[in-house]
View 1 (spheres, rainbow, N blue to C red):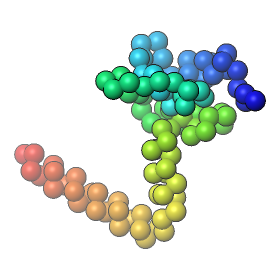
View 2 (view 1 turned 60 degrees about the horizontal axis):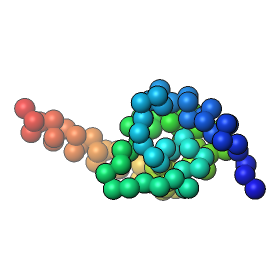
View 3 (view 1 turned 135 degrees about the horizontal axis):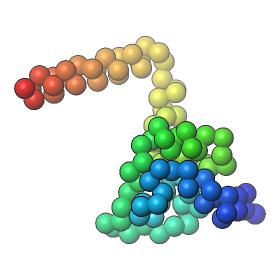
View 4 (view 1 turned 90 degrees about the horizontal axis):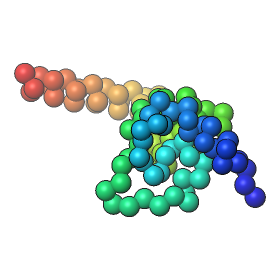
Length: 104
């Protein structure tokens, strides 16, 4: 049994600012994305994750506007302790500082 109609699905996807000119066959805002066919060389979604999450929040979308990979990463991140998160964030800051310094 379908939980969402195609009309409701399109209504959600139309909220994306890139909807009118997007060619990604597997839209993270598409309830039926598992049924869509993606071929090598097809466009990928270029909408920022923050916008997709905002649109997908509170919908019947399985990943709430995120890709399966983004969703899995969020689950892993939420499972980390605050100390682990802080170590990862600090490591990232150091790497960014190194890249910024080397780019000069």
